Image: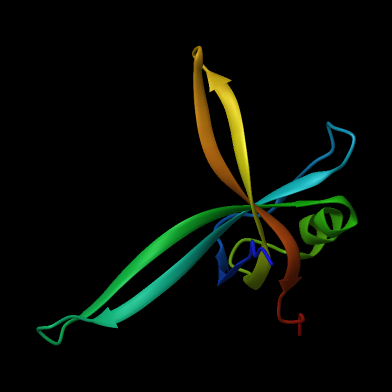
Length: 107
């Protein structure tokens, strides 16, 4: 059995932007994830990692409508390898494709 999953919890760094230029609408969500630890000298350290998450269809439309910069979200999905050409060279990357999002209700 193969497994291709990711789980992230963090805050959106900007409002999700809905793109409807293709056959299926999609949203890009930029997510900041903080990691805190204590080093060997007893000092508290913190590192922030940034991730770009993509989602599609009706879920994307909902996220563009309800989520805003600073929203706290839990995102789960799959990794999707990508490849494109830039300046005549092949560029490889990994897209984080959202399949599930949970966020606290307003109010």
